[in-house]
Image 1: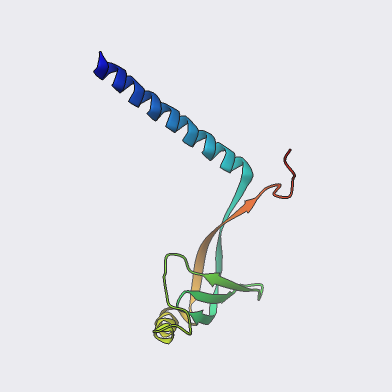
Image 2 (image 1 turned 120 degrees about the vertical axis):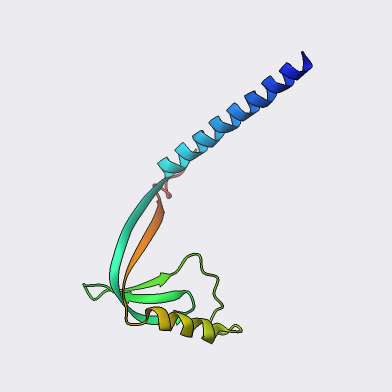
Length: 112
C-alpha cells in the first residue's frame, strides 16, 4: 500500500510539473513574438573573432554577432589571432546568415 501511494504521488508530481511547463510555454508564446529570417550579403568587415559586418543587396550594413562562439575580444589575449582566423574564413565572402529575434509584445502595457 505504501509503494502504490508513493508511486501515485510521484506520477501526480510529474503530471503537475508537465502542466506547469506547458502553461509557462503558452504564456511565453503569447508574450514574445519570434521573427526568423535569412540575411544574404557580403562580409565587409570583421570586428573581432565573433563579430562581422555584412552589406546586403540594398547597401544596408548589418552588424552580426555570431552565436556559439566564445572568442576573445580585441584587447584580450589572442584577440588579434582570433580576429585574423575569422578574417581568413569569411572576409569578402558572400554569406547567408540565419537569425532569430524575439520581441516582447505590449511590453509597455501596465499590469494591475
